[in-house]
Image (tube, rainbow, N blue to C red):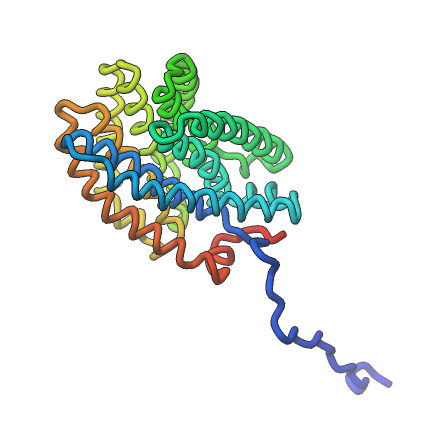
Length: 333
């Protein structure tokens, strides 16, 4: 019998699952949540600096810390459970650019939480700072291992490199508060040239190659190292460096505001959370430097108090139902 008259076998499809399969608890924790939680932790630190600049009690900042630090702890627990279920999800998450920045933000969040805890529980702050710095170092090693195995284009320099390579500067603020100025000096001297190299290469790349619209919000990350380095320099008494970093941060901030429609061209996205920590860090740095920076720092703090919680809520509310994990391609254990 010819092929045209041959009887075709009907296609058999697997029956749909009923009830639909539900992932195990925390099995698809999206690393992106850490980006906005880091922004909230930075906001707590900036709020404390703003209240001290106004000679007001810091009770409100302490209350906010009591809400945000446990939130960071819960997110860490959720991600650790995911890793215990299947450790390979770490490398799978590191393949995705937003998740890569989120994993770095998790350990940076530990450093920021340590800075928050310095006046409340210094011993706990010390332990958290050391653990976070070690965990961040392991993250960098895992990322290096992964990038070595991926094609060269997958390891191209991007704004999330600030999170991985310059992220330890967050620990310098806690180190100063704990009296470990030498540790803060080391973190500052190591991360400053790395940040400068990333800024220079990124500027050259932007001149010739525009990032795709969905990834443009990540460009806001370039503001964070300038603010962090400025704040740490001010804490270490390096006022000239602090002023220079704040001028650079101001230039970056103005450029981001001018190009805001271009940055947000792809519509609402979880990557909008990339704005949270840079805004908080910039406000906190100006308030830490003080002097002529106090007034603009208070203005930026007022902006951050509106923008950061709003963006954080938009991201965090999508976490429980799994929508955030799906939208950011989070690995599943």
